[in-house]
Length: 422
Image (cartoon, rainbow, N blue to C red; front, side, top):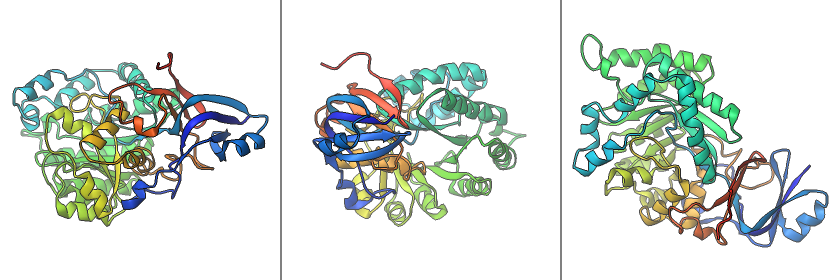
């Protein structure tokens, strides 16, 4: 039975090419009034003027949208949702002037999460991750990339990826799994007799083959940053990942310029993420490549750093820009994706049209799904979010508020608010 979404104040379709939007295309956000939408078999069947749509589908089940804004479900293309305990103590250390890399050198940061995750069972990690992903869903997200990366041993990385698979089986939202065994060099490979070269060999010769053989990930990612993985090391790891059939992502130029954006463009990576320290050459490289520049303003805000990614320079150069939450226990512990849109307007100087397209169409492109989700056009997956607002410009305006009323993922209910917003 088709579903007819009626009584919509604004229907934000984001309709257009089934690819990442660039430059002036990011201003072309289609917003319809007096419109309706029909879902059939998990896909968008029709979008258009309300009177014509209702007349053409007299037997459809009606979803009364209550005069709210209906839009594509948000696509959060960068998260680290599989972890154990939070790392709240690090926030105070940073406030006292201890830097990110110094915390890592002291055994904190990622290493703290690694120790914790290794001590937990798969069932424990699943029990912790499930409500977190549901909280992400409750803010309007219907497609979610989830990385491993807090295990850094073969079995602990596989354990994390199996948790993602279990989450996908349990939840209606679409999860995109990414293998991030190259999140850090484990502490045990930093002193003799072991070496970082041995760990990289482990990644290439044992981890990647197992991840591929068990079909546990769609992407491979590397944290390419001075003090973590060099560009040459990242090239070696990602080259091996490609031979095992994985698509490529890169943590690129987050804190210092490392040539990672240029590497992502050279390798044809699907996305290069962070980019707060990207060089002018890196901006040009991304503008000339198919790689999506995924910006994570919540991270730099939480780290207390004044320098955000140069969104305007990237957009004006012609790069495809996406937004994501970077949800993780140490540097961006937020499940509120609309808050990231607020930061993109206020801190990155993006327009509302740009941030909506960056969080839907371009987010989908950043996980290789621009032909599947991110817009409300016939044939696309019925991934929808209904917000308690009257104008789409209110979504980044009510910063930090919970305005998501309901979501549907592939036509199935994924979230329903328990109370109305007055």
